[in-house]
Image (cartoon, rainbow, N blue to C red; front, side, top):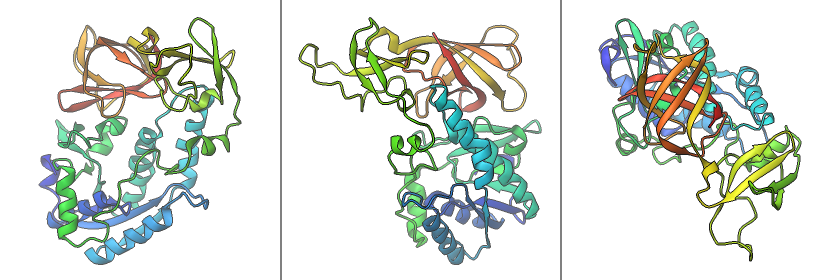
Length: 368
């Protein structure tokens, strides 16, 4: 834990989002050790009885953790809010041929939105989660920083959380490495010490993605062509593919072609055509993008009235890329990178940094 919030935990009621996994369980241990009055809140955000959803098992793990640590557990169902505020956006983006990142909206709308409101009803002074990130209060405003574990840093997914929410949030794992977290869980005898980390989109789990999506959006097969217009195969629906995708195209090993891999390089939505190319094709790369729904954590950075330089990520775990940004209009931004970026996907997020501090971000709208 970091910053001024850490020094104010003793006697404070901290409402912790407890998923039933190892990270939030260790967060509970650390909060208790700091003298906080910890209340755990387990959220149900998706209800689906098809064998893929692990909500029931996760709730049972949360109960066991709370029994062992002696902290009260509250359980709340946010499935309706999740469908209205996150899942509908997810479907709309796929309808438009884009590649959304619902985890960013889940954090903003659910974990630091309706969860925050519910925590206040429980008398919570502060919020907490098991995210690998760091928060602080600077000049009276909440700020977000990268987690110390470079491989687990989750600031990318938290960039749309408001400064007001961050000012009331503590991330106990922010200064830790994942192996340290596992060791604390193991040494404490937590039953989830070796539980597998959840991956992918939270409500999809381990289920086949195409099968899941097709239950909500009817597939529209169409031609797969090269940039020159040569027919090369058939796609199963543009929504199933993202720019830069290499696997699952079904066009490898052609006798009339080299063995270089094929990539998705564009989508023609009007004619329902998937454009693919072999190797490091120029269409895979871009040095410029336009972002929309621009949001800063707190006030916009100084210097935006002229050339403003910072670093950015266009995907989770990407190494920070140097760039120049120019906001225009009320919520749009032009980003020009020093180096070409591979497979920038509209619908994903570009997230801005000043060193370890996360400044905010925008939805990638256009690339060029």
